[in-house]
Image (cartoon, rainbow, N blue to C red; front, side, top):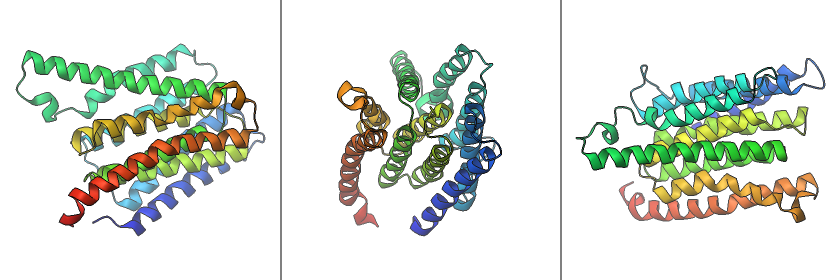
Length: 296
């Protein structure tokens, strides 16, 4: 059975570890440069994830045997390396995006490796359907990644990574109510690390794009929703709604809102994203009460 106290402890541990690491790493030289802030925030997320999963005692197999293992041991660490490379000013801008596209193309195939979706008796129709699903998932990942990164450059702020953290945690709760407890629990350190890192970065430098944090957040969100959809009981509609909800942040770029005070724009962005998340959670709770609660 889920242990709410353990989940809260893991959340607090991840957030505090990430926050303190970023503050300590950037307090040496003030004001902190964009490169130093980017490296500190990415490493802070890595530390927060390690601490949180240690508190949860989440057991991962090596070599990875399941989709969740491959997400946390292959896909997310690869994203961290890519975002670290992307943060250095001497790296051509095309190089990180080439690596991101390669990761987006490979991630769905990596997560489904060895599963029934790829190993079932093959027919031409089955092969085409599987290939189409993988390609569509890759496009959704890289498209969401690109759009949120562009928004962070166009209108930097803490609201984008916070929206990703909020969406990730909502996705975790939805996946839990769909019956995949371990997959949902894996979102807790990720969401907390994103939030803790974002707050610390904001305290050190209010206007920064946080592209590295956004990249890890998008890939992590996609990964947990992907495994929730294919290895849990998360519906396609819920998964797509949660993945695309952060794109509502672009509405704040309309001329009548863009030039308002930053705190107002940030709050408006978070409220926009919260609406579909609340709808998904309410529907998931109703479905849980109908199908799962009587069994418990």
